[in-house]
Length: 481
Image 1 (spheres, rainbow, N blue to C red):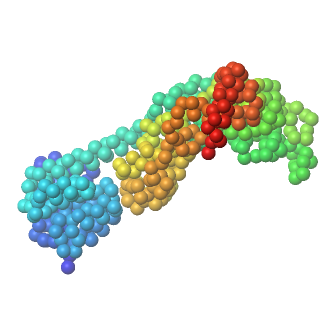
Image 2: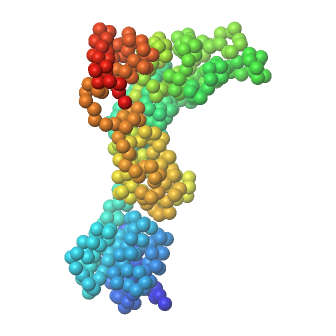
Image 3: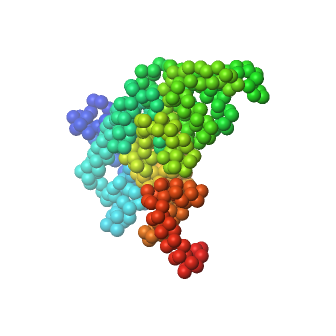
């Protein structure tokens, strides 16, 4: 039968106890198959000002860990039902942030090294050296207090680094914030570029909130989600009977948001015909509802966003040059997550706070090995992917720290480095890199060598010379695999 003994500190203790009482009040669980040893250690802990709970059954100690009732375990190695190393492994699996101190009557340097390698915080010999145990507990207490202060500072820093819902402290993001502040008071048109998931819409909303029209409407239209006819109706409105299904007259987003801001997401996906109509809005501040000859005046600020390189699209003939210059008077580039890795810890804290509240969890952070996994990932989905990872991990975890097992399986597999196109990267000779790049530009230009030369920044003669050299080499070596 197990025996559970409890010792709890009292405020009226000696000066030494008050001095040594941990400010975070963690509880120490003592487990040993000898009740007298449990009693002795609990009495010592009470003398030093620590709360303690004792048991002779390792499973009960493991239950204390799993329930979060203790943050430190002092365990004997040799026990009949479960040895201390097995308890160590199970305790760390249940709570990677737990500190386990192992004690043994058969101390050896080899066994101590093995225990530390397996994750033990310390390995002590019997009879216990009081000074050594006290020093070890003081180190753990200092570590907890330090982490507590760090979490408080991180919480304050999180507030200070929150730029209208965007978190960042990297130089690249601080530059984005600075430019957004400058243009917010004066802009009429802004182009925001960046990869999918970087937070372009949040930057657009921040600019609107800091603008003189912040009290007016902020209308959003995802241009890539609508076909041309529906997009035109959405932006400009329509009159009754303009097309099948138009049962009434409706204003479009430009009229709806007049006096405020219209945000056109993925503007690079629009057709040339739609681009010409957008150009008229920008130039003349006029719109026509679908099916109506009436010209209406609108007064809106326009923010456009794209994940494409619009300069390249212009040269390829897929985007109007005059519209590009109208939109890009002020251009803000939002960096991808790989360009701002130093922001990941703060973003993790931000998302943890968000999903702790959403799911009723108490996650305090990530284990070191989970943090390492996040920093090694290539993040093709950028901040949006990171948020989804933290959201899912917060649901899955049962402890106070998110561990590797709580992360998606594909995240834990060391990713192969890829290039910007998502293809596997491998070292190549410089001539081969040049050949591949020129052929890709030619494909993008649909074989138009004049446009390809413009995109490559070389003369047509240089391009022809290179193609002739490559074709000659291919004929000599035979077709490529």
